[in-house]
Amino acid sequence: MERVYNFSAGPSVLPEPVLKKAQEELLCYGTSGMSVMEMSHRSKDFEAIIQSCEQLLRELMGIPDNYKVLFLQGGAWTQFSMVPMNLFQNSKKADYVLTGSWAEKAAKEAKKYGTVRIVASSKDKNYSYIPELDKSQFDPDADYFYITTNNTIYGTRYTTLPDTGSVPLVADMSSNILSEVIDVSKFGLIFAGAQKNLGPAGVTVVIIREDLIGHAMDFTPTMLDYQTHAKENSLFNTPPTFAIYICKLVLEHLKELGGIPAIEKQNIEKASILYNYLDESALFKGTAAKKDRSLMNVTFVCPTEELNAKFVKEATAHGLVNLKGHRSVGGMRASIYNAMPVEGVKKLVEFMKQFEMENK
Image: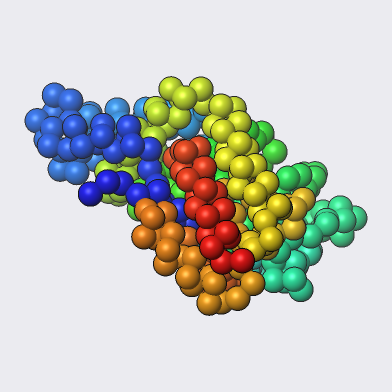
């Protein structure tokens, strides 16, 4: 069977060269005589893999030397708790911006450990836009300021970062890390589940400024203390070894393509192809505010639920899969992460044009 164009929001499409490389090395990695899945995380072979993965990420993202890179488990959900447990160091207060259900969930978890203030929210319009932020409303005594840079479900993203001054900016970048150039030094902490742009599900990357490590609340479990993992270079316990190996291959592939500037250019091209068609279509309508449209997750609807269901079914039959939108938005969602080729987006638009002609 031929490979389909997979528009899943996550776990999502991986670059074919990465999958082929992993296939070649599955039975025997290098001269180790075994698969990466079989080798000890204390072995020299695996230490070389995780060190290479970190160095590639540092190089590609321009991560400053005073930041630690951690490879953890538990996904973004665990970070919703780890962030406040480790960063509620002084005032035990934090500012949150609600731009979707994941930011909501993060704020709910943080409230268990300190005071959470909602600075702004776009819930009034089902999170279809990024709210304007008034800096005068930010709490200068907050221990951190929390945002979700890209909203997978609702198809929105921050195009301008909030200026939080001396308050550390914390960002959940699970669905747009590596998709565009960012200045890491503007953040105190960045975290991302790997299953969108970094690699397969199972590993979560945390990029944290060193001065924010070592101040965890007294009751913080050992495994939820960033210092535990920073001191041991992410090898305190058995990490998700194979997922980290695939991340390394993804980063190598991204470097070969020309790094983040090159993939950002491609991502803008892909998104433009799809958004331009949505803007001229009489049948399909984008659901996110134009000024805040995501480069990674494009959400759109037909006039009726019946047409939405028909479109998803027929698209699947044409090898365009996982286009059904999240239940809170409905309609369709095309996740066009780094590994989705331009050709895949063009094929989608071709099918959308055909569908529109047949369903006027």
